[in-house]
Image 1 (cartoon, rainbow, N blue to C red):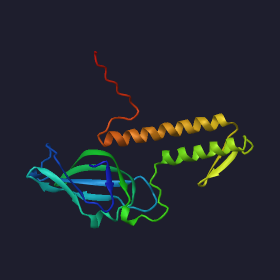
Image 2 (image 1 turned 60 degrees about the horizontal axis):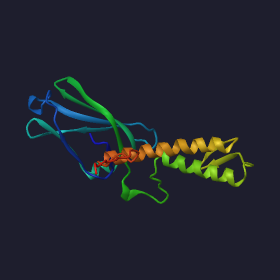
Image 3 (image 1 turned 120 degrees about the vertical axis):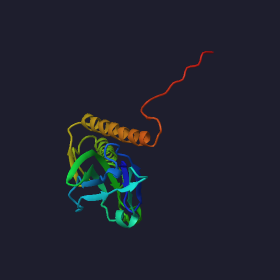
Image 4 (image 1 turned 180 degrees about the vertical axis):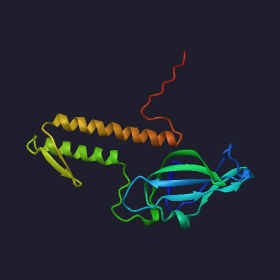
Length: 188
């Protein structure tokens, strides 16, 4: 199963389950269960087709995937045949919303990126008022601090979380971890 799906895109991949080949009458299925409650999204069931005799092919067209709500899902895969069922795998997948249907005001930043920016704003406001204003409400969330040091700890925490997110994205894209410094030494 892919780690990322975009609603409205074609989902197409093949997979092999050597212990349960399609030629033996097995059917491979996937279920994507939303980890969120709003917007309402019923679990998504996908049945794979036989591919190259023994393998399976998962293919979902854009007309179907366009209706999938964006968010994080738990996925499960299993094979079944004549009343028997065997679980094959499980994991998580993120479904991004259909980019052609996004409205003004959509914010694609991660939670870490939003919180980091909010913490930076709170620290700037705290410093600008010389610590006289000790509570803030940003984007519907309230925070209260006694010292700039507490805010600095929060900013550093969220900055580190943003770096983790960026590193994960880089690694998934096949690039090196930006948190690591690579050094090459040559003998002269």
